[in-house]
Structure formats: structure tokens, C-alpha cells
Length: 367
Image (cartoon, rainbow, N blue to C red; front, side, top):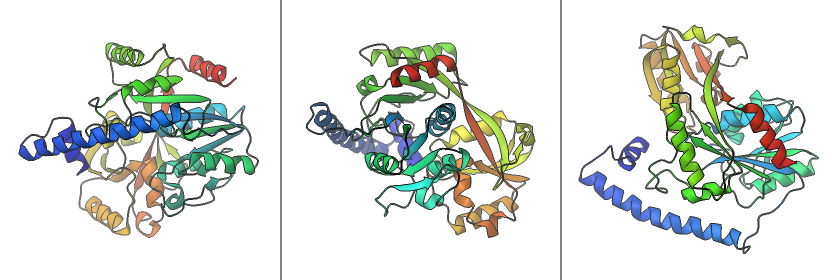
């Protein structure tokens, strides 16, 4: 269904049904625009007020739905900052149990305090990966910040996906723009993928164009020019690449060389915002993809799903199964199934051009 709607949004699907759906999406987009602009007006005029924490707050977010490399960028920034700062990461915890409204501490920095069902896949993955950092899941980020301060966590608060979260004031707004599809079709949800009008890019203090690894200089220059046209003053713009880091055995920190996948027949599966990016990464490693299965973003795997995947794998010509780090945290609970399967995960990392200049910009704004 999701792919079908994307085909309509981008004009790849034609016909009477697609035409009628497109009209409906455009009408709904007008209603969404009114809500977004009204909400922004209420905060800008002071009718609704952003709440401020004692700790300084950095927000990492995007202006479109779908993957922009936000999770690996959060990992990159937190790793850079944690050596000189106490860090608490607060996230809504997408894919987590929705019944729990209050903030939940996910990690003490030394040990995990709950599973991915309570934290959400991305937050759990970050908490599992990054040590000496506190992680809190909170739909209301301000309440999460209050919990951090009540527990005595001093230093910096990093908001995961906080660009549209006006309720909490922040000292630094970092906006990520996906270089492969920077502005969608320039239409708001649900007629496009924009969460806000492009004019709201001006709220960002620093802009990162992500996934530039397969883009030419001219292409990235055009994106940067468009970004500058959306702002009242020129903002610092940096370019980031998402790179394959290593192959890991499921439930293990043992790293294998990326060469492990070369010419190896693989059975790949994932449930992320941009499954095509995962598939492209595997192809870049010269893996021989025997089968590729994509689930919806933040997909919650069931035991039946794992049994079906296991059966498909056993009936395929593949030698191993591979998934993303984010997906791996959600299938670990099915050990009676996964223990009998050769499942691996692909770890990725962010490489930022002009990294020293970026970190200097961050420190200047936070000073």
C-alpha cells in the first residue's frame, strides 16, 4: 500500500483510480497545511510557549518523512560530543509500545534497562551501541528532559527527530536533508512527503545534506542553492556520506570485513524507511542478492514472520541472511528460530566532510 501511494505521489502510477486518489491527497494536503501553519503561528506569536530546560538542547530532525540518515548521524554526533559532555538522548521511540505515555529510561549509559518493545527499534539500537550516554524514550520531549534533570543528568540533551517539536525550546537545530530526494515533490503530506513547507528550513541553525555518496558535485551544489533560497540568511551547510562500516553476526559484537559479502549469495530483509538504500548498499559490496524482502518502516516482526523468512531462505539459493542493525534488535527475541539461522547485520556510519568546521560551528552556537 505504501509503495502504491508513493507511485501515485511521484506520478509513476496512472489511470482513473490513481487520478482520483491524487485529487483526494491534494485536498487533504490543504487541510494539513492549515494545521501546520496554525500551529506554527500559535508558537511564533507566543500564544503557545516553548518550555526551556536548564540543560542545553540540540535537536536533530528532518523536514520530510522517511529515512534521511538521522539515526547514524545521531550516533556520529553523540560519539563526538560525549568525550567532553554528559549526554542524554531523548526520542519519541518510533515503533515502541504506545500505551505507555510517561517517559521511560532506556539505558543508564552502562546497561540497557528495557527491550526494544518499550524503547522502539532505533533508540534501542543507539542505546545498545553507544556507551556512557543516557537514553530516554518520551513522546513529550519536555517531560523527558525534566526526567533527565530530576535524575541529575547534567550536560547536553540531544533530541532525536525534534525539528517539529516546538514544545521544547532548543539551543541548536540541526536539519538533515536527504540528498537523493531532498524536497520530495515539494508538496506537503499526504500529497507529498514534506512535514512542513520548505520556508521552515530557515529555522535550522545548521543543515546537513546526507547520502551524498552517489551524487555529483553539481547535483549537491543545486541542492545547496535551493536550501539557501529558503532561508533569510545563509546557513552553514555540510555534506555527509553514509558508508558501510562492517558486517556483524546477529547477537554479537564480532565484526567481519565488508569483503565477507563479496559474490556471496544472500537473502536480505528489512523494515526501514528507504529499503532501496539498504539494497544499494548490498550491491555496492558486490553481494549476490538471491532474494530481497522489504517490510514497512519500524515493522514489528512476529514469530510467524520469522518462520516464513526462515522457510523462504531455506528454499532459496542463498548462503546467509542479512538485515539492518535497526531490524536486528527486533528479531533477537525469537532466538529459538534465529539461533538456527546464519543471520548477519550490516552496520553503517556517517562520514562528514569538513568535520572540524562542523564541530566548531556546533561549539560556537552552544557557547
